[in-house]
Length: 200
Image (cartoon, rainbow, N blue to C red; front, side, top):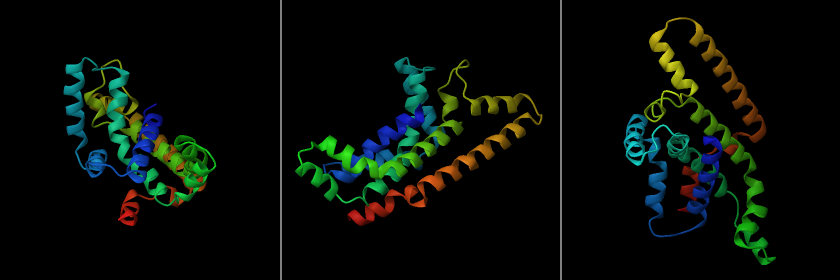
């Protein structure tokens, strides 16, 4: 679920950064990309304090919200990098034919983003599935994710179980990445940095 929410929210954020000019846009971009440099432990601790005071600690919403913050930079990078390479002329042509802004984007631009959206979703899914450092702060004992359970298992037992499970997960990750690369291609995972340079 976090992967889907992160993909949708990140796509909306990427559109706002690449298609519109408004005061504070640079600040918004910095805030969205901040989780790339802020330690995840610090983000998890801050989320723990926030959700505990708000009464959301241990809820599914708290877990999805935390993962959304961590996933947004990746979707913004991938989708934003694709958006800056799509000329506005397609949307303008759709607008000239009577389509509204949303319909013009959905019909003219969104189909050209399908590869980048697929790559963004898969990456978000893998990051969310593998997240431990921040997740451990917001999950309750009856809401453990697989990586957190593996971390706690490692503290109690020393046997080959985790090694076998890790091998399976690594193999599945490689297979998933191979499928994405074969389907979407390397251009789908280009970053937003080149797009920012082009806009300047």
